[in-house]
Amino acid sequence: MQRIWISIPLFLVYLILSGNLTIPNLVVGALIALGVSMLLPGRKDAGFNWKRSPAFVWAMVRYVFVVILDILKGGVATARIVLSPKMPLKTGIIAIPSGSKSELGTALSAHAITLSPGELVVEMDEEGNMYTHCLDVDKSEVYVAEAQALRRNLLRDIFK
Image (cartoon, rainbow, N blue to C red; front, side):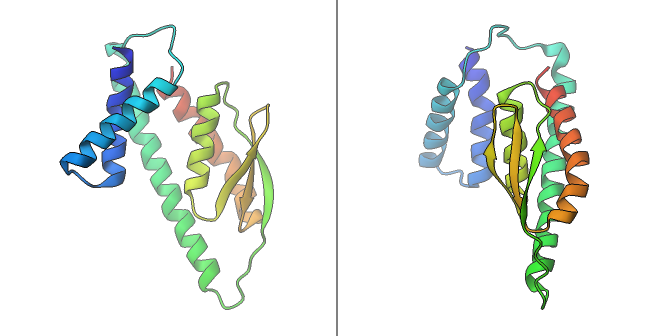
């Protein structure tokens, strides 16, 4: 039963990302969601806590909004760099501490960073540091601590 509860949001995310509601795609999405849920480790405290669901939903909505906003900001900044006649690239790799105690939290933070244009997590170490390639190192270093703290807090609220 726990796998079904995990598969439902995965299936919904698949449908949102694919944007295709044909019968074959629904079947493929359901199979992918079930397959991914089987790969995830089982939780010892299985069960859905209905009392916590409003906080969970609110944290999820805020997290998705933050990721979308980061994607839009990164897209504009990347377009500005690319369209500039001088192409003022200050590329480099910076280390971003995830600050998360779980591997899932670190992975989701790395995913959110990589989704943003102009930044790509290229390596993660055992301590949870994410080594990120940036098109503009100066701007990324200023923004990264605040953005990672916000993502970490939202993920903590989601996975309580």
